[in-house]
Length: 127
Image (cartoon, rainbow, N blue to C red; front, side, top):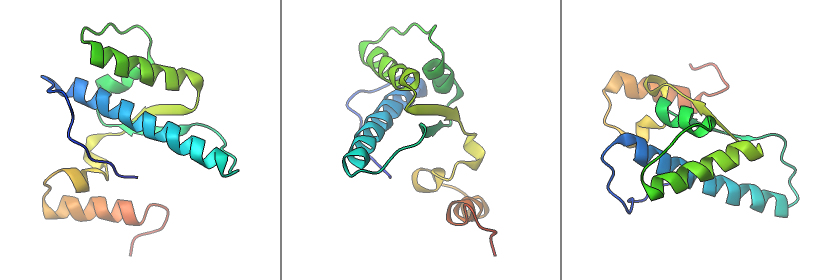
């Protein structure tokens, strides 16, 4: 599922905006998992969420972080709660091979073709 929205706050670093985006993704995962359960579809295991910001992944998966801004702190605690409850598993995905970059960044042709190939031929061998 792709989602795009202008954020309500201006961040001075990518950490805060990535943490807010992770919280938004977790909220959508929560709603989608609820809807699937209401349809009678069994869910086995956690939903995997990948982030290309290593600091966000470390702070969302370890409980010893201290954050100064209130909205960042709320997003952090929401991510920690989902991770601790076991229905979301947050992991790191290197930015060089992130297929989501095709839709969000200006890339050279060869890199874009490589990422699109990865995206469309996820479980198959590319031609």
